[in-house]
Length: 186
Image (cartoon, rainbow, N blue to C red; front, side, top):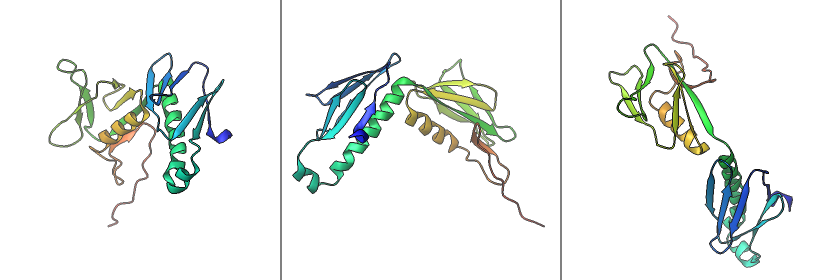
């Protein structure tokens, strides 16, 4: 079946250890190891990875989640292939009077200081596997090898000052546009 196949890029090496149910994905940049469910069978052909269920029909009829397990495994493997090949990054910008971002390189290279209009500064410890770069005082970006990690960090930093719909102030993604609401009419 074609819908159970995943195309393997040329610069990627995939090893399947059947006894331990491990899938090792290697690229020139990094290596990732996935644990495969025991109900799945993987077969590596020339340029494709084939995903199948064990041929136990009684097991398939009793538990409907086992059929869904194949599509979940397929999406996890695809995501892991993408994460081994590329770096992911996001850019954030601060919109508002006095909103600034700085880092304390003297104390700790992975510490961000956010000034967001509160009476105090917000200190944010960046994880070790994430790199940060400042473009301006109001723009910064960070990158990681995991897409989920980048989006999680962006959501966490945005939670300090969510964009508000009346003046458009807050922490926004680089190309995000806020539709402003109309205020009270006098």
